Structure formats: structure tokens, C-alpha cells
Image (cartoon, rainbow, N blue to C red; front, side):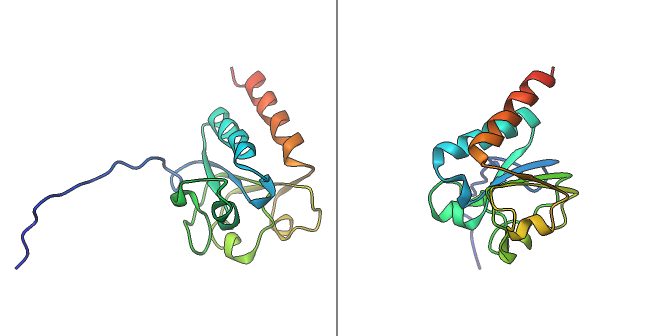
Length: 140
């Protein structure tokens, strides 16, 4: 026989699984400070931020519940923006069913580009601020 002494339910911090737009970053983001750009972009797009395991392990994102992939969450947003993500099979397993996949990567041969609907070949430190600026100007 078991007696429940206390029940504690914590409200979810974010809704990554139910978000229509996910902006995800990988090790290619380079730093925790660069990840802040993704949070700003996601805010403009009314989306959520996810991360690859490599980015989590590097300490770029503190929330382990933002990890997307085989050992994290599986997401199916309408739009998935992958920034600095190489696209290892473990990560792709968690996001391959997304509606539209956009890859921002400086490596034109990155595996994620093979499944992406759109590829922006460039440095994330240059591309993401331009995306933020564009959406700020056009989301009125």
C-alpha cells in the first residue's frame, strides 16, 4: 500500500513540441551569447528555441529539455530553422517530419542541407541578425 504525502506539479517552461515555429541551434552557433540571437529571432517569430545535443553539451543552452533529437524531443513544427546544425542522424531523427526546414550553415556540404527545403549558405553571426532585423521591420 502506498500513501501519497505530497504532489508537486511544475508548469512547463516552454512548449517546444507544440510550437508552430522552432528556431534551433547547434554547436556551429559558437557560444551562449550567439544563442541569445536565436531567442530573439524566436521571439519575433512567436516560436520556440531548440538545440542539438552538441550545443547542450557545450553549455550554449542550460535547459536540457530544449534538446531535439534521438536522445531529446521529437518536434514537428510547420517551420524548423536550423542554425549552425551539421545534421547528424541523431538530430535529424527528432525534426525530420517538420513542414518546412530552413538551414543556415556555412558548410554547403552539411548533412542537414540534404533534407532542408531552403538552404542559406552563410555564417550564422551574419545571417541571423539580418533575419531579426527583417522580421522586426515587417512584423507590425
